[in-house]
Image: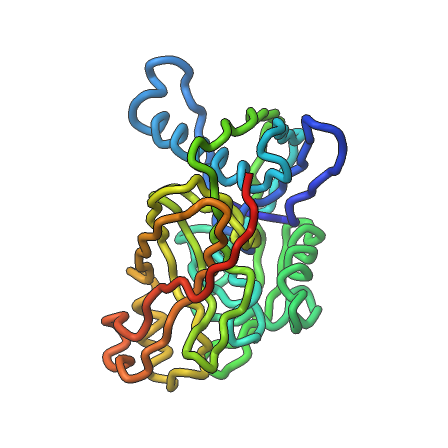
Length: 306
């Protein structure tokens, strides 16, 4: 998915309309949409894959509800979207500039010479520093008119890269998501909002999926779940300062392939579960084994959920 701006929420009477330009962190991953056949042809091959992506998007959108008992309408006019073709972490755990997590082969970022591990320190001459660096990068992309100049930090060297962004024509669409049925057994929440105490070797967790389904926007830090058993797919966001240079390089290489762990929890009604990862410095060598961290629930709080 390729956000060019934050989700735009418009308050008002239900059903609510939401202009949505993005779901996820600053993820500028190119996706080439293909025509999807209607009817039986859509049940197999690329049609089935496309329907699966729609299902995941609907589940992600449902996490944006202010009121699960009301319909949610999402609509967009036809437009052209500019895509970089890279996954960008706008707020790395070390507080530094936006980090390139992955690059899609053959897309704009690859043609420009961006690589996983690069830190984007400037875009079109504007320095990217501070907690709003991701927002400013989004704004620069939106205003770029298709040409982008970046300055990146790679292995201690400052490099300049530039090139044309990919243009993707998006058709107009309208989607209405019906109200969620009331959960018979109640509901609870999982949260990554509170920063866990590093003094207890606890660091932020990144929630990716629940029960194998897309969690939704990684900017959304609280997810409502029906009571019962759920499996969370999580990655770590431990500060880079806890590792030496060699360990960080090996850690990045390991994260490109398998950087997830699973945590199974039993959600009780009216309970919020705060996620974190526990750091085990004595298990850092070898980093590739991923034994140095584990997902945990570090705090439970009571919170009515309906």
